[in-house]
Amino acid sequence: MNNLYSLGQTILKKLKDNGYEAYFVGGFVRDYLLNRESSDIDITTNATPKEVENLFENTKATGLKYGTVTVLMENHPFEVTTYRIDQSYINHRKPESVVYSQSLEEDLKRRDFTINALAMNSEGRIIDLFNGEKDINNKIIRAIGIPDERFNEDSLRIIRALRFSSKLGFSIEEETLLSMKKNIKKIFHLPNERVVPELEELFSSAYNKKATTYMEEINIAKVYPEFQRGLNLYNNSKISLDLNEFFALCLYSSNQELPDYWRLPNKDKLLIYKVIGLLRLTRKTNYNPLVVYQAGLDICLMANRINQVLDSESDQEALIQDIYTSLPIKKRSEMSLNGHDILEIKDINNEEIIGEIIEELEYNVVNKHLENEREKLKEFAKQLLERLDG
Image (cartoon, rainbow, N blue to C red; front, side, top):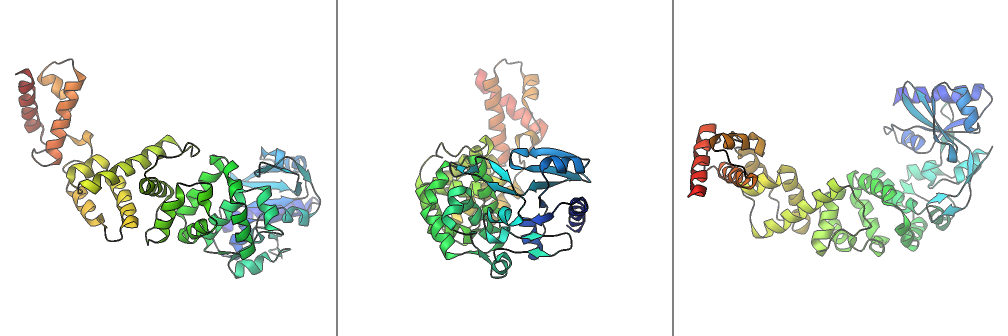
């Protein structure tokens, strides 16, 4: 962080030496005051994007529509954004256009929360126009100005407030929280690519239960009804889940499919449904070598965490770990016999039969009815083939 801070200071000083104002701004300043690591450093300036591009050798035009140029220093990106005033917002999501400004105050007051509206110059002096430092010290998340206006401009700020609560352990100020509840339905218009990353970070952060409690309080289930039962179960447990596990809990406990408006990556959907399938299976069948082998350790542990949310007395992690450790093979490729070997025993042009033989061998090895030794498996495969011929 010290190296990034030094590189950022270099940018500030160069802008200042050329007659411009420039400050560190936003999350970096907040994290600096909290003595937290921060990998992203944003800079605000009264220099226009063109002036920034002319001043620095290595730049990328990453957000010219919103006045942002990325300056690369030792291959690390620094977003440098011109002071701006946002014009009217479209669908509670983004400004229709921006107007450049020469006023730092105008730029800071368009931001979301007081803790993110702090600026700092190259000498380390803090510019705090909205008592953000006081809110940091009191561990408070407070919307700048009138909360309804901030959430009407960009309803993602409702999710961001939750995410900051989860990340920092801060409480949400009462008027801000009331406004979040009042405006909750506006988040329905947000695209997944904005919401899902926020929720992923929320569930992976240290204070996620604080945030999920707020999710219940602002009645997020008005927008995402599949969260209703899951949130209640989750907030009454001591278990921490990631976002995919939370989705699995919600869908399993409410016995429903993932709604179409959640356009998750296929690999995440597959994972969620594998976990749900295992939850349903283990209600009827205890964990055994075949179940653990077929599902895999990670899926079993995910299902176990969700089971603990559903029933605090149902922790089977030790059993799952013991079963997995004692498995003769962890995956099919570890078997000493494969499909090519079976073709050497008998030239059969039927992939389905070969697959059935492999599955039978796999079943017997996993359940320790057969040792995973090539000759023994080969002999067993011969017997299976003879049986099929008979």
